Length: 508
Image (tube, rainbow, N blue to C red; front, side, top):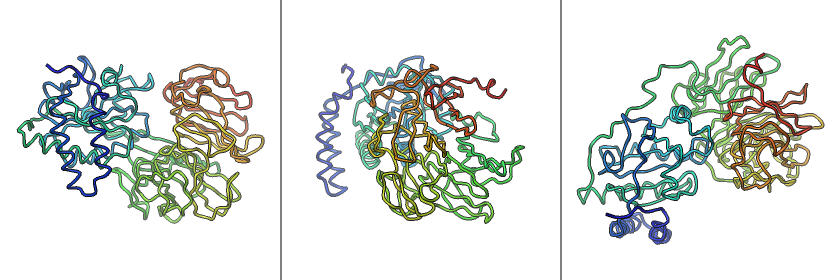
């Protein structure tokens, strides 16, 4: 019997294929190269260990085994953790793959949830993520990352393609490999179908979402209040809509939903896809339409929804500078309105680990050139996933900016940022563009695992994946949604200290 293998046993073989594919010019040539590779990899017969017994499974009747239920299938293992924006970017590719090839065709996608944070090991939280991201394939909660460690997986996300005997075929590390994923999967299905090794049996899919009653809200992402009218804008993320409600809870407008889509127009026909951040001022609501990779504007007085930035396709540009509707952007997560010589919409661009600016009027960024109305451009962040502070905004590194709060007056004049993947609160000066540390994390800019639940000052304080922040101008205090600690925290930026407020205590 073959001994168990690791991804390091696969890499020298697959690297030859990867190099050959870079030089291939036609689809036929690529398919032939993969076909030859599959014959070669079959000779090596790289077998991996099975899932540990006793693991918790979602979207299935029961546990799955590579030796039993998944035998005779081409299996795509998606090693992910639900907080990771790069993992989220991969889900549409997997969804499209499952639309193209069914379980009866011989393909099964299995999400192997391998937690980064302690909060992500809890089954109920993984269940919520499966619902929130509309994952319909089997997911195993490998809370101790056993298979991750046995295969020596190194980062999220990682895809591992297996043959019908649980044999290693391919590995794809990171996002942005859609073409290779479809090429490898199609070739593997054809190869093993011709060998008569594929089986067409069901694997017992049972969707968790089908057991739940409907709810008024579904994973609402953000909330904002118009200080003059006291109306609230709510991003009802799971229902793909934005609600505008009175301060007594009366729903005044419901825009979008219940299914995802991308459409401008009147309030009754407009569509969103998992909107996250919202900002309301008067009759205008700005929306971070996250999974459409757009920034939208709702004009309540005119009854219209329009697109301010983004093309509707995930962008990789980390500089920007084009007019909004021509500028590709990536997973905007929050928005807030400010001023940079004119009105500007600040954007937490989680997908590229940056803060961007959308100029609603002519203006100028600190340490930047003049920008015309409509321009959408990077303000801060190199694009590297880091916890790096710097007086030059373009040299700073953010891990996953997820929430914004504007402190517009002296002595602050800054944006406060929840940088969830580094578990820190950062500040971005609107005077000179300097990115500074407030609380959480640690000094090593590459260590994104410095999290915890500790009150204190500066780096002695610890948070766990904070997602929201709100500035109280009157008291000069910052309220932080310390999401994975299930607490609201209170930060005094002048002394760089933070204390936790229990939810009940906060309500009192």
